[in-house]
Length: 376
Image (cartoon, rainbow, N blue to C red; front, side, top):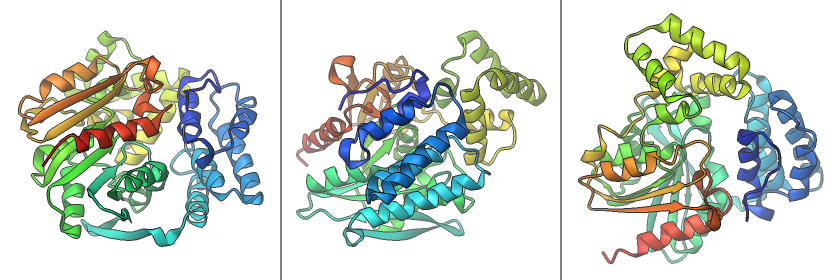
């Protein structure tokens, strides 16, 4: 699948491609072109209404997997406290489990710090190994169904979980943590797994590397997109001078000044305003200062030298979220890794966008080929 230009707004267009890249599994492409014509600008309520419209129609037509993905997209830009967000999420869950063969999955819960983490397991017919996968800033485990099925078809049993700040775990009140070794260790303890291969998607590219730095039961780790420094990712569109100034202001505790500055930016940029609200929602912070201070901790600069596993780094040259210059920085920082393999995809591959949206099947095949390049 090629990355398509549905709408001119970059972030909205990327979200539409997240669905389109799965082809008939997740959507009927003419549905996406239909609603794209009615989304001339970034408007979270209009975005919800357009996706909700085609979700209901898909349900009426018996296309329940399409409806699931449409319901998921409908809630994407809604504020955390909007009741429509929860309703859309519940509709997404309902449609998804109607669409798949539920007997193929094992749905379970992992005890975690007085609560639990949702988990899906899919057993491969002729198992070569077990892969543990998690998302990042804004994904649900069910969204990874195409990747899960492809990997299982290739002989790898899949374990996918939602950690703090993600999916149902977030809805239970578990806020995101930069110490990702904690949920990963809970999953490994619960399943009795050792020498596991771990894949982190999007912000998961930081989270998985962080877990590998502190969890020796991880054997190999895939950053299925690199992050390196999430503060630089969050402020990628901000001039470097302003970025450095903000970092100093946060380090010096200038809360009022940072809040005023970020709210002023949000008033002129709806996407920034959404990112601030969503970031506060998943991190449990109550101000732009708190949000930025929290996510400043999501950096591998100080922990990359602790990572001793085999590492695969994946990045796209035209990633609109993660600046491409972070890729060599991450690669060079892995000084103690047993091996480091980097895959930087150019436009000619169709995989040059964030998380290789545009050709995710080839990305999964590349991960599998990398895993199978090891003889032990």
